[in-house]
Figure (cartoon, rainbow, N blue to C red):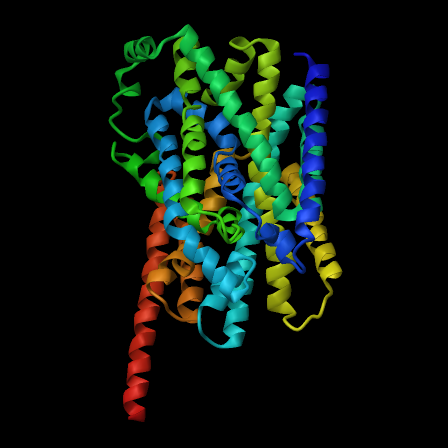
Length: 486
């Protein structure tokens, strides 16, 4: 492995990212107050918006974990991974507009604040709701961030020829640097640069595979190895029946529309941004990145004796690509990981510097300069906390952390963000849904042997039922109170 080439590529891309962050710093200052840092001064146009959404959703899991699942379970993973493309597009077309318009009307900058302000009720309960939403966002996304940091260290350490710990520290420092400089604008601009590299790597991978093994031959050889790879009797990691994989579509839709590090993009769109333009840019990028798990099927044919399926992509990079192409594709896979890590870090820093501040010290009078310093300090502090937790955390599965963190959080947020648009209620309904979604999500994940997307979806249903029940009870109480007054 040519580590000098790899270091050179890393330094060049870091310079580009810092340059984009410095430019985004100017964009950020065009908006007075926290809106510049937290919502990119509402500057996201269709291409930048589409790019940052796709880059964040198709994280390192799509390049490293998903090929391993395809190696073990076959084409069921291709279907599951492909569902993310239409789900994200549906989320943009059907949810982005009302989130954007209501957030602008109410002047909210985060999802937690959006939930608190969009529901009627006592001011104290609103503050409690915003604080609870911020706390679970911090806890669950910090868990997710730790997994991303570890994954970055594992890959970057091999690529740069250094220890995993040193590599993790370097990657975290890079992310903290450009995220703290320009906030969400820096995240979005660097994501755009990174998703172009991710798409190029997907093209390189597909050309390499199908030049060596045309699709028909790949299908025939997979069928010769194990018929279940092409015609599975169940959904592999997604559930016990072959239909469980269809649950990925609603899971990915809720994921895209509710998680703070995804839905904040909707709130940050420019007023002139047309959603069908965003969807048009997203479609080819998302479909192209959905093909990456084919690597797992290819390696299953070429190297059928892997003891660890997660080695599918590393084996492909080292044995089936030239050293120069391997270096470039590895860099782009690191891009995929960083594009998610920076978004998660920005989301939890906003929860600390904005939501907790508002909930605990609602009457604090900080200047715009002090608020920006607080935002940047939160990025630095939480990035450091994530790295330290990674150092002392016991061994864990990266995919488990991703599902526990993001899946449980989306279950807590789905009712007060999405269901509330069609079934308006009060702050008590929002708080009950947050509590039920959080605790049921954790319980179902830890105590029951369910498919990867089952626990979050079942918890989402319970949270929505709780929200609807409290909404209905509140409506009856209002009618009874009105009749008594009459």
